[in-house]
Image (cartoon, each protein chain N blue to C red):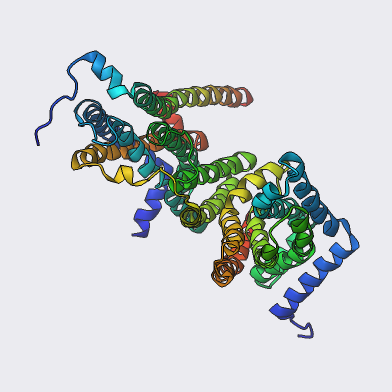
Length: 247
Length: 67
Length: 229
């Protein structure tokens, strides 16, 4: 078991395995993405309340759902970095932070475009999910900022690992406290959040396809950036030199 | 489950039930997002490979000259 | 074995005393956060409106955010001087669990920079027209809340202690993390003004304080080991 674990930590092993897997993952991603988008754009029947804005929600829900995976992923990678000092975990975590910030930003952007129709406003503090997503975005950016502020790679790895673990705990606490804050501050407003629970099974099936597509995109993108990181950090090793010569 | 295309004409499709701006804006954002996060790493990979190649060439000529 | 081994408790007390003594010698560590709190909260009436009723509405938030910023700005002193003169490394190589030494430093720092802000808060509360019945709530929530801010902020300070330009990055790390405390503190003031009982809010903040006393110094200690080699 430990042998397997040590192998998993080797950047070369990851590079070789991802080389084999990437075409399949990318192919599956493209397939799900095309099916999901065509289904959402062409076939999804209009909702009786929201009309065709459910087409926005398909994208929004898929990106938002995936964006919640980043802090847990970074916390696990951070624990591996701190406990087993595995280089690969940090290479993944480094790119996950930036990609996670992207995901949070797109969640906020698509959510606010949807809100501009359904709520009549681009930003709404009474929606707890928007607010906690905003703070997740800030926290992910702070991990990125800390990484770029520390020059020493090894030190940056450990510091960001710790900050990711603390940040992961904090995101959960922030989520619950913002919900609590929201319930107590909820004025008698016409903005109800129940509207997006009223979607039919077809909506959820299209969204399901889209969620798989976005998850695959997340994995593919993370593998691509991690492979770049491996090449850069391992550039002195023989096997990278061989790849360079072959390229 | 039988489903059919919800639009009878292209212009109706582009109009998106009156929400054209919002729906297409979201799909545009999504497209840019996917494009940036897939194409940039691929472009970067080429750049990194080129840089490593350049460096190793320099190093090899270095060791050659000291020999 | 003539050398008397100091107990953990003694080490804790010695660290605390040392920090308090240093702060006493350098008076501005005590005065600056306090002055910052005063100045920031005086800017709100100028920026918003001198109208007492409008000020009363936002007073709780103004006081809490000013206290939060004061605590953030004071945080930088927590480990920096010790890092620069090398005594932080001494702390790290000491045989005692770093958890207690970090906790001692945090408590010392709060006594010097946090407590004066809490003590002066009723005066500012009067100046910006916080409703009378909320004074005690403000005082107690700040009394429990500012140590949480110090303990959590300490993690960020420890992570950035060796960096050249750390002011903004420290704010980026610590400010989002202070959201739960800010929510609890300001909700307590607003809801008790509407007649809700205070006990529940104090219990929640007390739980936050206990949680951060047990966990935050562990993270700070680890962060110090990472940033100081």
